Length: 242
Image (cartoon, rainbow, N blue to C red):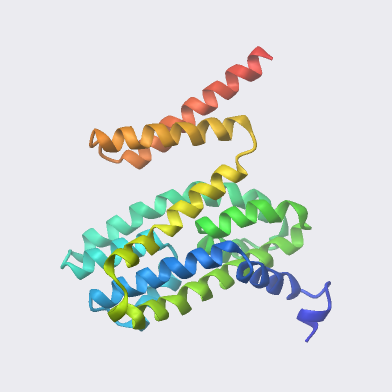
């Protein structure tokens, strides 16, 4: 098995990514999240294979919650598709930030398609932390392995939650779904080393709740745009002043 034993073999970075995913705290977060998601799918009457397929195709727990709750309550298919698509917009900045790190290892454009689809909050945070220390040619297979490890965890524990649903209290299922945004919040705070990142992070914590309190539509989008522009403006003024 050269992929496991020879560190120069093409498959080795992929399996290193799988190993990194399985030993990451994000795997525990995904396990808890997808136990809750599996219980939700069971309560809405969806099949377990349907949940597994949606995990592979959508690969975003918040979008899957919208998908399940909208279709489960009789929502129109086109409205559900638009809502899920809009939630995916939040992943676009993550893809933009990740591509410069992995583009150097791509021989063809299609090499970037799989890691682009695989981009999620957990994969993005871990990639930004681990990839800078790797040679460029190892980064794409490592990212793919990382995501396969996370996705496999999600699928397996989605099944676990589905078949445990009868004995899982609704409050616990809801709390498990809350693990993903909380882990992303903590990881983002930990990885915010530059002052501009810390300012943007702090502004997001302030602006977001205010917009929600005043029932402003598209509050998440306006929080990102407003906080990002203000943080960048402060960063530029500091550079000019220095």
